[in-house]
Image: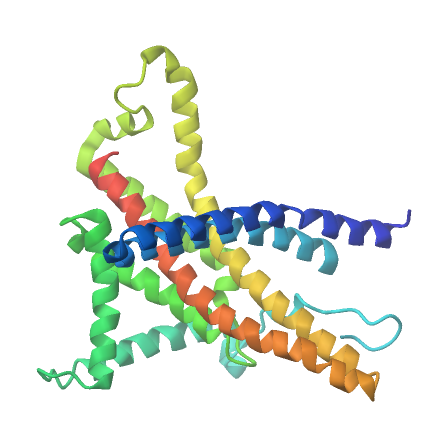
Length: 74
Length: 252
């Protein structure tokens, strides 16, 4: 296998991590929807927490994406 | 895209530093990154100055914005840290707006995102962690080191817990800086990649011109997403600073 093909494959493998992040973000928002549906008055407090969790989880996706970009473009 | 041979996507070229400000700029290595930092700081100062000049009882638009810009980090600091948060409010405010301005100004065409450089974000994160440690030491003295061993844990677990706590404490600046840096780099690389797709497809003529509308639309959507991310990452950076300061002031 030549190096160029291996690089592309490596970048593809690097973003498999996004599957886990997808599950994580789905979990966060499902919990957010459930909690707001149960107690709509808590929306303001819970929403901030949910967005914080989303941002922290999304960062993991970006670590993987960054590795893929580094493999592809450097 | 570079001409000749197989087309390649030059996605990381946008993060290259160049000097700004003509001869004087190149002498003192004043880069476009520094220029945007100055512009960002100037914009915040201008907003606060102009917004607070009238001091009307019923605020106008600009005053309402300035009040919002003041109150949002204030609420954040006081809610997270507690009443002691007032002392750290200027620090949180500065961090929040420095990062926010970096993220937002970077979205303008031909602009530059200074938060996309690990040197900048790492400096900010180190500043945060050094200040948090100093605050904790000043507040609690030697008792600060009990932070690494939660009270109530069995003593024989100490060899396991203490190294883990120390590693988690030391990894805070790493995750804080890489999160912001990776978000910005990934977002802007995504812009560059889809913009290159537009050019590549457009070069086919005919059907390619129509197909090029696809990546163009993706870029428009991405711009909206990046606006969200820009504000969100500034919020996350500031709120994590608040959480660390809370730990420093209250020790668990």
